[in-house]
Image (cartoon, rainbow, N blue to C red; front, side, top):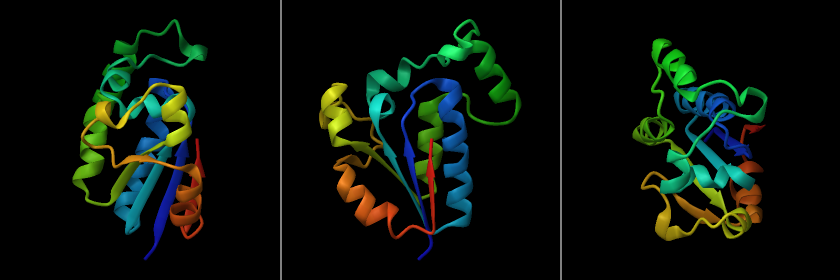
Length: 139
């Protein structure tokens, strides 16, 4: 079984689009895609965090609506939660939150979005998902 493993550490709208696009491509290419959200990115898997996205500091003056419009005009869902739903519909993508990051940034199992596969330890992810993966990507 060929798999893709990814670690995502940033939660800014414009910075999370690339790893999610590669996750979608990975679902078309590999048997399984596993993503671990660490640091601030773990908030993307929470109900509050996925709704509170902003552009990165480098693009803080750019209205998020403008970016969303351009994403939509490219034919993609502009809402990150909708992207998570599309990824899960493939049946190949698994979204995990890092347990340490979840503790630090206040994300509990009770407030995860339904698409999240749970909160896991980084060691488990590295040994069970990243190490055997054909491709590993970090964002």
